[in-house]
Image (cartoon, rainbow, N blue to C red):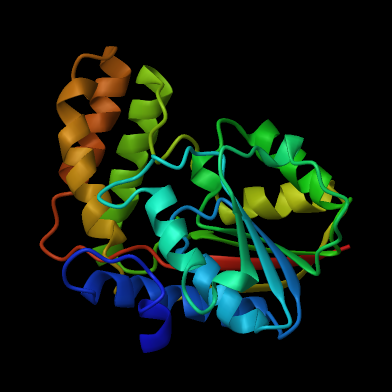
Amino acid sequence: MDHLIACMKIIGDDTIQRTQLKHRLTLVNAFGIQPGMRVLEIGCGQGDTTVALAEAVGDAGQVVAIDIATPDYGAPITLGEAAQTISQSPIGKRITFHFETDFLTFDTTEHFDVVVLSHCSWYFKNPEQLFAYFNKMKTMTTRVCFAEWDMDYRELSQRSHFCAVNLQALYSAYFGGDGNILNVFHQKQIKQMLMEAEFTITKELVLDATYLQDGGWEIAYAKELYPALQTTPQPIQTMATTYFHLMQADEQKSLNSFVIIANI
């Protein structure tokens, strides 16, 4: 892990990044990424999964990482700053970044061994957009590896993260904008979309992610959004208040991650 941490832009202590990278390495291992593979990563963000993919494919492989966001998006480190640091590192030659890039208009004739979507589906504006992505993937790969937060929480301590996610989704649904959570997809919805796009589900598993910091971040942000939800119509207020009270638990762990692998 140390050599990958050294490839990333970090402000202050690296504890958060180490925790995040641990999870990404676990995901990439579950994806079964092998040396020499050509991988397309959709929704690369600041490159947390990208560096893990680059490590797995080795010098003979290649990762093409795309994101619809602009290079100046993100805080305290922007996508552009993160990508620049990674590109100048020893694994940089294995990665090509493309920002402000919508996959639906991404023009390439390349064939990829794997297309990866890692914790990015909740940014999609609607299910139709995600389904269109799956349909296009058929033209450039025979394998899709998908990971997202698992809304089927197993422990009561994960309920606060579950409620925070729903509060943010309610906020986005009513007020719009470009928040982190625009749509919340359940694992069964993803499976159904993949199958309707003519993929066959070949592997499913759930990975422990309770140790990640994301649950705490989402809860803190949901608390900031809650007052605005009190200006919405009464049914939304009532639902938001219910989630808000359920979110107030002494122990607050992150949701797990589910993984789906599908092949043509």
